[in-house]
Image (tube, rainbow, N blue to C red; front, side, top):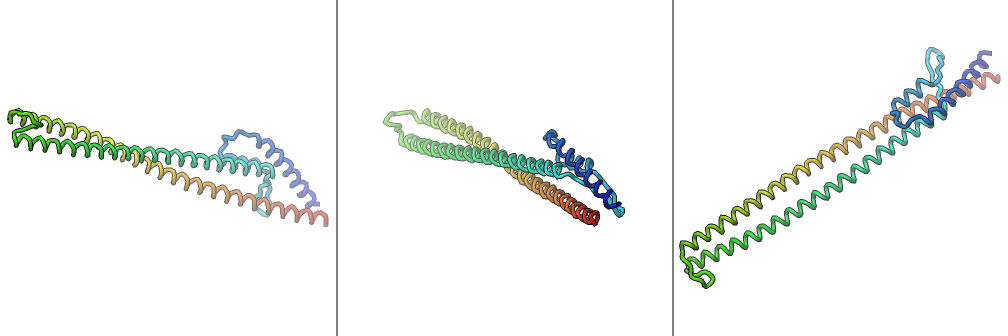
Length: 225
């Protein structure tokens, strides 16, 4: 008669576990996987055999937990994809900004070279006491030349300071992007590790369920005998 009572005990355990799994299926989605797993384990019926404690978990509860695992993984993958897209977009914008700054620098260099050529031509005309066909006193011309040169140097200094400031900003952005990329890789690595851990834990629970099913089948055979 003992096997028969054990069989009734297992059957009632499966019925209670299935009812609990159905109730948990509508639970809030904000429960963490660890909390769901602990609830699944705590609410499972226990029995002791040969000084070992076993848990009886309903299939519905196990399916609901597996669905939560899949939803969590999908949500994290979406976040990773969105973060990658934002990083690529920001990096493209930074590259475009650097290219514009390089173009501006080339234009400044060309303009400065042209101005320098004009100054040299003016100095040549002073040396020859003729400026664009107009007679001018040497002292006034020298003062005018120095004023033009100083103005050009001031403008060049302003342009160089602006370029340097823009370059520093670009370098800081690039550094920030590198940090974001590193954090993204670390987050992806941690997500994979957590996913593997959850899968291993789930496989362990499935193995326990398979072992319980085998024991139940064995008890059924004994009860028929």
